[in-house]
Length: 181
Image (tube, rainbow, N blue to C red; front, side, top):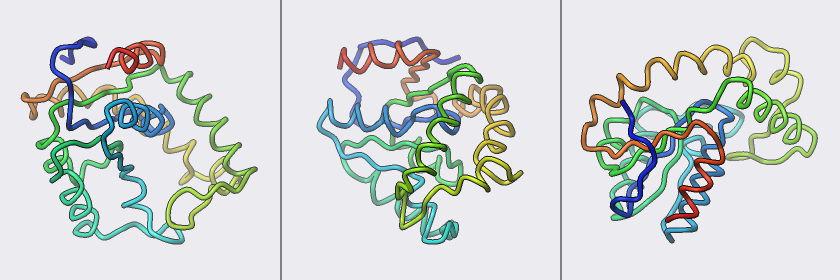
């Protein structure tokens, strides 16, 4: 089972994971800034222009190149390259927040991005209709994956015993941990 937050060794190769909308990228950017490390968002490698999914080989090559550095912070949930990123990481941050909190964060973020037409990755933008109403949209994805990830993550972590796992159940825990770096 994941450890509670600690301040033992200073992490240098960090993966931030959690369900969609939990705040992975925001936290990863804060950690990277605090530790003066490069940051990468796996979504940027996966979502090509016009929401086309990157070929697996291309995605894995991006993870491989980024994680070959001596220090880094990477966020994402893509299992197609865990054998690269998680193997090279020394620390995994798991944002294990309650479903209602994540849902409201995701809804607010989706509405904001749709309204402002903020560019996400490679020219892609949120589309309010599909994201709010479609079975393929981001809100439906949350309902399909949030509780499943909470159940499956401990088993996946067992395959990477070298990782220091830091599990946060509230945003306040994560903020305090970053402040202590």
